[in-house]
Image (cartoon, rainbow, N blue to C red; front, top):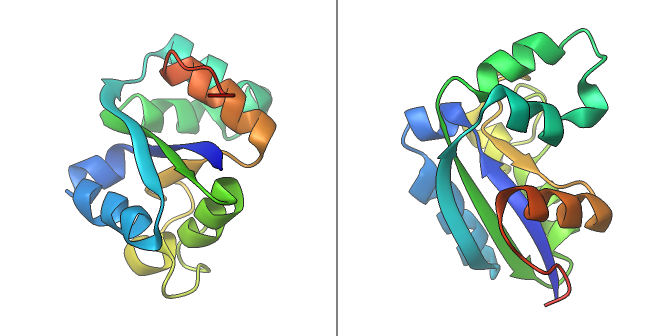
Length: 137
């Protein structure tokens, strides 16, 4: 069993898609083992998106992620990282295939509803940022 982190971004919360999106993960067979709503601070954004700090799009990304509440969740299941990434689809909602979360609900590359850890190492680091968890339990 793997665990991974997802963040339902401000546009998902604003559009009242929390239950719809979480329900898709549950219907797939993933278990929600931790869940909370929070507000990003600029400091948390810098820690979470540390790999993007020097990229030209970072200021807009930070402004977006701190613009409203976010829902953080840990999902658990067989090959959870890969399963979740396939379910959310490519970053750009216009290019994401129907049947993926972004393909069904997003028309943007920036306001793309969901963040998901892209590897087991990233999942461990990101879960520790948002939850007091031992990634091995």
